Amino acid sequence: MRCPFCAHEDSQVKDSRPSEDGAAIRRRRQCEACGARFTTFERVQLRDLTVVKKDGKREPFDRAKLERAIGHACRKRDVDPAKIDRLVSGVQRQMETQGDEVTSVKIGEAVMFGLRTIDHVAYIRFASIYKDFSDPSEFAEIAERVEKESVPPGHDKLL
Image 1 (cartoon, rainbow, N blue to C red):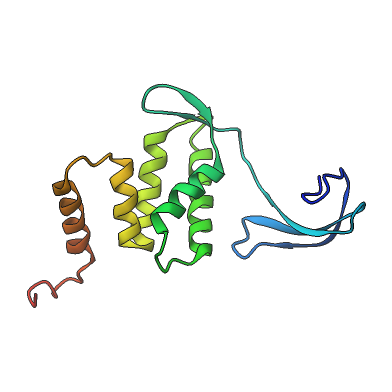
Image 2: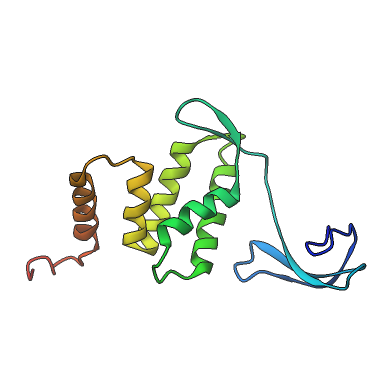
């Protein structure tokens, strides 16, 4: 593993353990040249995924891109980063089980499903970009739908 500090090619593993969600292995490493310590994560990758975009273009699946998109939706929200990581891992694993190619539509739908259970505001933010809202009424419509679904049964009569 290349050292992120001095770019030396070799490092020594000092400690290995499963990550909190068990989906990765966390390794503490020490560079043999400069002595700096750093952490790496190893994840299981079932296959190399290709994402088919709406315009027909194909590109390799990029976990970091998915993390950024979900992170933008959750910005300034009280969302546990571990939940975001579990959502990203779950979406990636779900897509890997569907074959070598997956559409961006399927990825977006899986993210929306996961965000809906984590944070309603993040869900609406993600949906506004994913579904390319062009009118304020679309925001109102989805917000109203989320609000109706989040009211416990029997409590709607009290409102």
